[in-house]
Every structure is written in C-alpha cells, then in structure tokens.
Amino acid sequence: MAAAGSPGVFLLAVNGQIESGQFPGFDDLYCKFCFVYGQDWVPTAGLEEGISQITSKSDVAPTTLVWNFPIDITFKSTNPSGCECWGWWDPARRPGTRLTHTSFAGPQIVVSVYGPDFFGNDVVRGYGAVHVPFTPGRHTRTIAMFVPESTSRLQKFTSWFTGRRPEFTDPKVVAQGEGREVTRVRSQGFVTISFNVVTKDMKKLGYDVSPSDMQNPSLVPVTEGIHKY
Image (cartoon, rainbow, N blue to C red; front, side, top):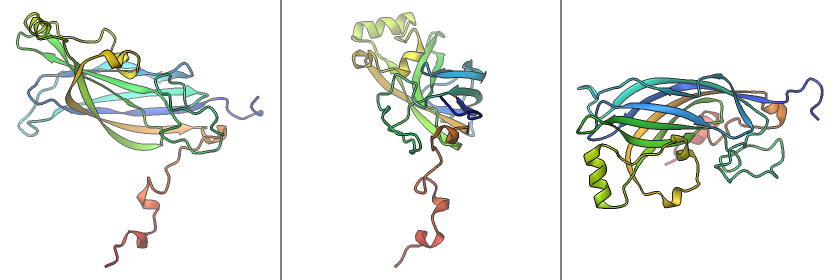
C-alpha cells in the first residue's frame, strides 16, 4: 500500500498537432486519429478521436499536405506498461530505474488518411501508428503509412472499379499485432506529428523518465563537442 500522502497514479498530458503529410500523386486529403491504450490507462481530459479538415497542396509546398490539426489528451495510470500490443515490458524491472523504449509501452495514436479516388469515392490513402513519447518536452515523429492490398489482380481491379478498396473495419487494429502476419500491405506516404509532453508524479512512484545526457546534447560540456585536429 502506498504511504499516506503519496500519489497512487501518475499523469501523462499530451498536446500537439498532426502537422502534415506527404502522399505523392494524391490531393484533397483529410485524416482521422484515435488513441489506443491498455487497461491500466484512463483518459481524464481531452479527445480520444477526431477528424480533420480536407487540405490541398499549394504552390508554396507542392508535395506537402498541411493539416496542423490539434490533439490534446491527458491520461492517468498506475503502470507505465498497460498496452498488450508491446511484449517488451519487463515486470521484473525495479522501481527507481530508468524507463527505456525496451521497458515501456504506453498509449499509441493511430492515424488514417482518406481522400477521393478517380470516381470521387472516399478511399483510404494510408494507415499508421506511433507510441506517444514518455519523456517530457517537445517531440516530432514521422509515421510511415501503409494501405492494405488485394490478394489478386482480379480483386484489385474489382475494388478499383467499384470504389471499394481494401480497408480495416476498425483502424485500431493497426496498433495491434494480432493477424498482421496474414495481412498484405503496401507502403504509401508519410505523416508528421508533433507532441508536447508533460508528466506528473512519476518520480514519486519510482519512475525516472528524464532525458539522459546522451539524449540531450545541451548537457554535454562544450569542450567535449569541439573536434580536435
């Protein structure tokens, strides 16, 4: 049992935006997002899902689709694992030791991008997911997107002609590993997301997520960064 006055949960506050996407050959796209998390995580504020405006390429950025769509959510949890889709969590890790990418699995954000096809039907142009950073500060992540593919040329032609392209009934499946080995996909596009992360009461529970000296070059003495010739 926790000592009197000590917190029983920690908080992870995340805000930022889905900044832009690059999808060569496609235009007039919009995106959707949702968060996927384990049973130990509970959202306390903000939105778990959303849909952006339709954006088009411009003369200034002919290869980039700019959304700048905001995301804002706060989670509480007692366990920095809590996501069954990652098997890297080590329950034997002792409190007070640093959390690393191989010892932590937290919420993921799933992004799906849609746009019109040749016949004007809305079809998926990309799925992707990334874990929410756990280190306080500003982070930028670029997600490699992908789309499901038909298993035969006949199905591919039929789906193109009817406007019913292969897609997931629930985009959250992108954040899970089950069944992925039998799904045929193709890489298509990139999406850039920025996160601003704030944590509360993690150190009081024995977890250290502060950046290491190697992760933050500003902590390295200036003389160590000077090349010697």
